Length: 165
Image 1: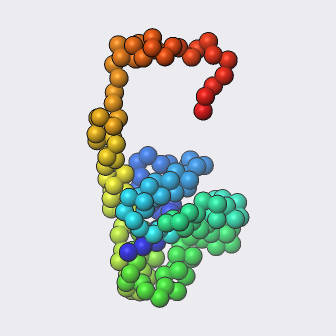
Image 2: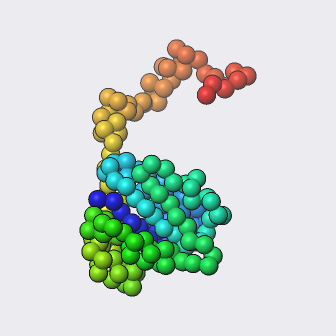
């Protein structure tokens, strides 16, 4: 079931992203990309104007589609249009705490999740450790002694005139 998300409404519910941050939209998009990949979901997120025209295409990728309202419109207006034009509303989940827009989504047959609830789902999903992080054999922690041993074997690169990338 794909998600339609009121972007700034969701940002306002996340403790680690501030609406005053000029990169708040990008930070949310990165979280949504990770969420979409882990949950195998499609997401459309809509923001009020904030990015230059055409920038939304550059921020969109396979599972996450990004839309910014023009200066003559608003995210709420775009969301209302998208909800009304949706041919399969019961197959979608709308994320927002805006009463007016959530009421339109509910009347259309969309599932609705309040932004504060979805923020918790998002954080819990992203907090879950990946298999690499869970397996200490795949992600070892070296002691200071082990680091010194490796430096003795391979040398210290501080004197090198080049960097390897």
